[in-house]
Length: 228
Length: 190
Image (cartoon, rainbow over all chains, first blue to last red; front, side, top):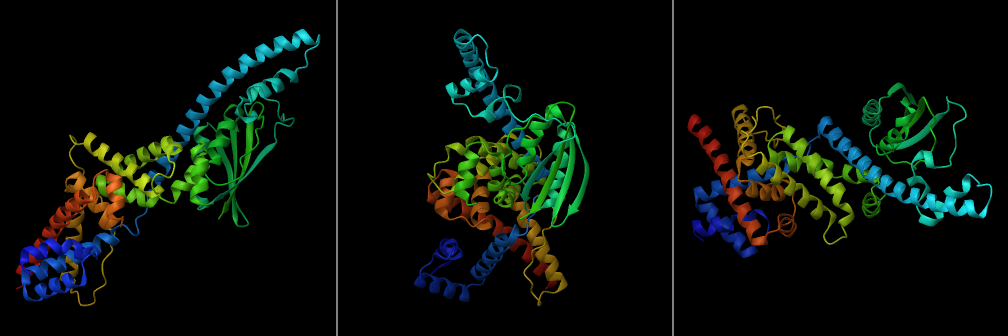
């Protein structure tokens, strides 16, 4: 094997793709040629360095929050688009059905058009804007919405919750260790509460919440962050 | 929850599943962005843009390739797009990049040799960030991330021969710098 042939086979050797005969020829040439031996050694050293280079890389916290924030915004904008689409369709259906129900019954049952609208359009209840939905009304303004999320890093998740609370014009009022978990208490203006809840749910794994009427004023949240 | 289930849920717009799915790939994706873009600030932008592109198109992933191939194709293309867009800007200083400090433990290394190794590593990082983008992508995906030639060909949308040629030329440039550093040291110490 000459130096040219050696150079040509160096990459295959690095990738472990050289047959036995070629490999032996390569090693034999390297044993007798200083320049090629240096090439072979350098090639291996560079490859070893590259293969371990990013083993222990950590993603900066700012980079971690940046993309998660962008996804939240994207998810929100996609949801709004879907809501407007379905609200438009349901509003039209309700108008039609209220009209029809008025003809059939002298007294319109308030619940009837909504239920009929849902059946007519087959739209899932939780896609409707809160005002159009019949759901649990908060009698007591101080009711706290409880949520449990499984996360890989509770400290990081808590930071996300704080960021999200600020984004929705609320704040975290308290945070403390609760056994193996972290309990985070937050107050959010009621008009932002639903969006806040959806954003927080994306921080970890948990049961998707049923829709909830947060009423007016301030919504109170108790978020249980459990380490997986 | 397994990857397939997470992909199915993420395809329906479930942000929690998307985050869990991408959480597993985040570090590796960031590493690719960092080596392609050359600095943490641009890498952060690239990572964010990649995640958005993945989120918007995941419902179109039907298992036509492995999820990793599909994912890193998007990541690499996003990096290449960003690099082309930023071409007019001067390249950021590398002084901010911390030496990640992997070094083969070699008890025979004298302090001088250890210093040379550190220089060589810095030189490699710099040279890598200066390689023509497509050559850089091939070296990053193969020698740093360990993808196969077939996977890389699919990610870069070229044939395996082209991938091998780009890697070969990239490795040669890195090797030149490595040897130049070693020679400098040898000359000083003869």
